[in-house]
Image (cartoon, rainbow, N blue to C red; front, side, top):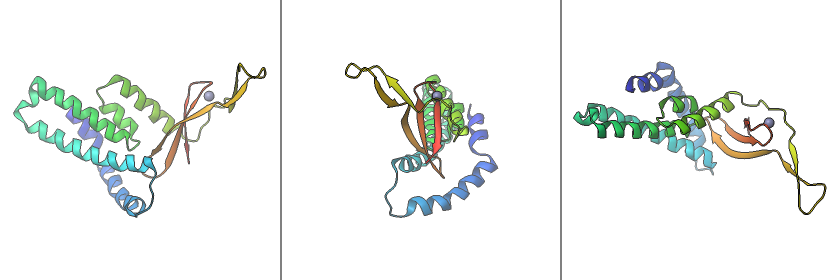
Length: 172
Ligand SMILES: [Zn+2]
């Protein structure tokens, strides 16, 4: 389990990328400018990742690591770590690390949406619903914006298509 987490997070590519981010992030987030909530979430995700990694490494050294309590604590930390990665839009890694099946499914869904960023399901953009007040019905947008996320570089809007149930990602 911990090996998996090391392979995932401590690769040379990941380290290089993390270092490259630092500068951009300082420029973008360090300035005293209003920030989008998604950017704040991202920064909190970076802190959460660091904190969890520290705690996981410490727990591995403790004698209680092999006990039931140690195991439960590790599960908890892995879930927290996965959430920290998800807060940085790192959904593939989050899906691999979480011990919660519903969360894994949600992370995978978002990972797939992000990987297909800019693609559209080609459903109509509006839908007409029956209305008690208007015989012609009421026309509503078929895409419901559900979330804005920041991936370290771009703000990405996730929308839910009411026709096909697809999750669509578009860079703002
Ligand atoms: Zn659709």
